[in-house]
Image 1 (tube, rainbow, N blue to C red):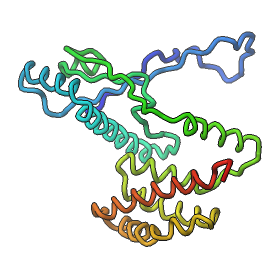
Image 2: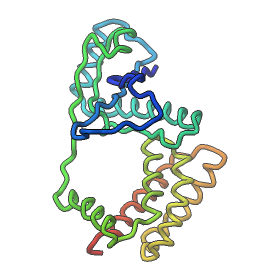
Image 3: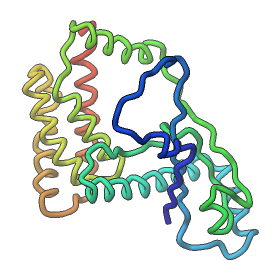
Length: 243
């Protein structure tokens, strides 16, 4: 079950009126609404002791905790995908654990957790990976080059990112179709990458053809993920300022 609450929204009566209003002071930031999404397991715990054992197990096992959070994010993105299709709204985007203001894991009654309250819970701390200084500066250098006009934004860059997002959201069929277009665009825009990408052309085409009519096999999904990773590496190499 997924429960969505909007917190801190401005009152609608304050937003009425067709004419723009004069602004005298724009120095202070406007309060913005925050969405709280609670994912509740379909199967209840047999007892409080069982729930406490589950929660303690997650606290002591980072890998199990990560797996639990990945499942929750996947469920939420599946719901967002359904909303995106139903509303025909391309701007309803997926979410990631890293974009959340806070992540909590806990247990309680259905009414409790639906309102953001728990019998017991804890906030999950961020776990940023260690990034070398050179790697951390590369996105800034790339952004500066794009904004200054000294470098062009490749069509393939956006397409590869979309394929990666589909893979992360466990949408392999969409990822396969996106990857086929991304690969062709990358080879057209950066022919020098052909040598490192040519071996992925057939597996990507095979995955895309399968995706038109059926789910991908495990081997096809693995080959697709390897191809998208290699495309990303090729883009990083092709867009480095010192290439």
